Amino acid sequence: MDYGAHLPVVDFGFQEFSLERLTTYAQTARDLGFKAISVNDHLIAARPWLDAPTALTAILSHSGNMAVGTSISLANVRGPIQLAKIFAAIDILSNGRLIMGVGPGSSARDYEIIGLNYDERWKRFDEAMQVIRSLWSTLNTGYTGRFYSTEGIELTPKPVQKPTPPIWIGSWGSDAGLRRVARLGDGWLASAYNTMPDQFSAALTKLNDQLKSFSKDPAGFPNALATMFMYVSEDKSKVDRALTQTVGSMLNRPIEQLRERLLFGAPEQCAKKLAAYKAAGVQRVFIWPTQDELEQLKIFQEKVAPLVDG
Image (tube, rainbow, N blue to C red; front, side, top):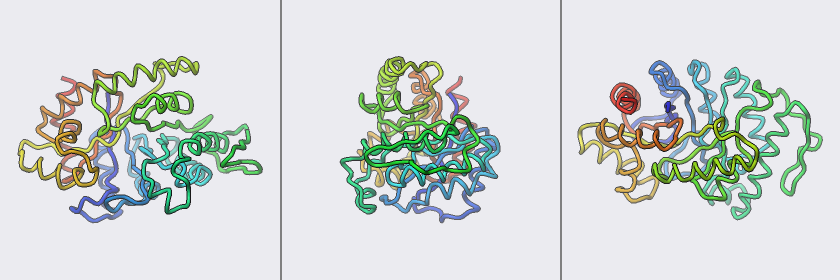
């Protein structure tokens, strides 16, 4: 198991957005040995949210050899043709380091403000994946569906990665979601605050069965656990404040459930949770510091990660 870091695109009330903040964060993650950097995507959220593709593009030249990507990007809300154009450019500018995580999104408000029917999100999403692959392909294979068509559209320049950059599908682990991951995706993105190690393990077993039904090799199908919000400290009062003042209010979930699932606590406690996910088959975890972000990246790599492997 290795580790990625989420870009700090959410305003938790402790630090203002700036280009310097983003680039310094990316440089720090790079120098500490994180393998990937990713960004989450929302139009409207409970807290101010920096535009995801813009933030990701801003740190490309500071990200070294880390994979760069989204976890997830909103394929329907942004539009698959627009998304294909944006992320073809990011793949080119990153010299082929893009992993595009996508999903339909779970906010009905996002759909409302752009005039789309939220109840049609999964049907739209299935078509959107085919649109993106069609536009990225060098074979010029067109696609026409109920919602979208690529007829007469030639997207250039194409991405660097061939036949296309990898597309990972976000799913919380439902049977329908896992089947969609197997059918449409090149990888699976799970959600840290929506699962537990035993649930992830059971879902991975189901996913592997689905992959075989689509003639895909489970051994070559990657996965990652995204949105692992984090504040590591021996000081319980600091941990409690970090949990309640940030993700507790944003996610609208029971505090004790979030404490159980996310990395809030002493290094040994956090390492124990990650070791359980490693045993369950998780290949990469994207951590997301909620306060003191640069210090927390360092604490994670120096005091938590070694305990997981140990």
